[in-house]
Image (cartoon, rainbow, N blue to C red):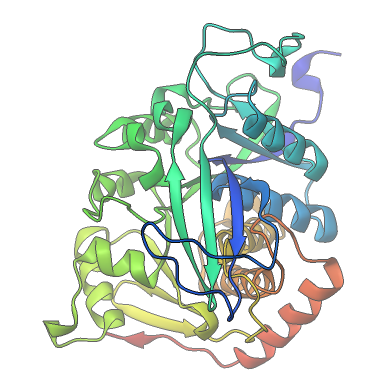
Length: 381
């Protein structure tokens, strides 16, 4: 039987960052730490898999496993860069295997990779380490101190178009952690997306910028959006990218709707609003969706969980309609937003950004979110 005779596995490809997160939880009795000072922690620090690419892949694969998508077998592949020979890389490799998504290490190295069947996983590599973050969680918020490590060498030219070899039927491409992957900036990622879109005219592309630690909020992002269908970002990210400030005399929704409508009119902009849900901005229309407020334990990764739910809801909806009529509709967008809200709101109830919620919990929240958004309508800006 030739390769063309076998049914291709349908693919959702994630391209993004991967970090080992070192968590430090501060309770109400922990004093503020000053430079040169010290404080006692009541809870031990833990190191777990993280990074936007890993978080999104974990939640997305869990949704596929629990709820399925019509039309065949679906696989999640994460293209990222780690040093598989250090302790942080080992944590990430183990996590991907545990949760069932493929980690495709796109690291350029003089050493053979353990992901290509060699036995070199214990070899000492003098190259850059796997990226890692110190995550400080306190008073319902989190702060990061990040060492990018080898992820800063990830280039657009390193991305594989996984539909080329004929083994995958690429359905959707999700790029995340843009501002953490500096070699994607200023046209590098744009060129690769243009190539992939040219070969796969029917696929959809979503992008999550993440926080820009430089606070410049540029990096050529607006140019990349020429090849993006969905931009998913937080309020803080929207303010930074649109250069919004309180003195403009407009609400953030109104200002962002005009900014993105003027600069990338074909892009559906999804803004997450924490416990207040999310809103969709497109063609000057602002559509808000409420969510179910949960007892927040750790907000880390809630945006990534939302993005996973959004992508899952969109691909699932598209799989249930005739291929000839697969266009982005209001029903498809609503389904995507509801799945995003259900997945994101549950993420905050547990510690850690890559801990997916169970099927029953997601299903119940989805029904609740659907009920409170039954009559949702857009408002023209």
